[in-house]
Image 1 (cartoon, rainbow, N blue to C red):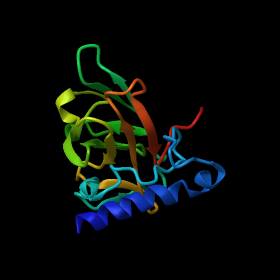
Image 2 (image 1 turned 180 degrees about the vertical axis):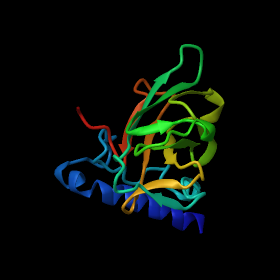
Image 3 (image 1 turned 90 degrees about the vertical axis):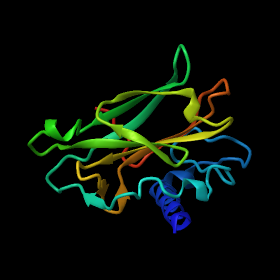
Length: 185
């Protein structure tokens, strides 16, 4: 069951960027750097990633609310591990007792590393200890969630952002994706 869920998530991500993918020529050995690329045969695209994001059902973004935008910004910490900044627009991130009333969506986020839910995020910045990562390529994924824990969804796409990283490589972030990328103002 969980393998099917991951397959559906992977297909959703691929379908959301199919138009950009067709415009790009990516060799099978190149590591893609844009959200429109695919990582064919990537070892992280397997069944171990299946439980991510599907812990709770989806909830639709209301028509009268601006669509949240999100991106992950990852940097090596000066001491150890990785620092994650969740860049957001049109979303109030915080605990339930601080929920805002109005048209802007609010809630929290769920943080996953390599398919394992690590924690809820009530703020945009978090330190990820080095012990969370295995040697080589790792996947960091964040979903936007209502306070009921349901994943916010626009149409048929869940609001999430992900990055493939390699803490051992010179270039930390290998590939990033967002189902609702930040737009220029």
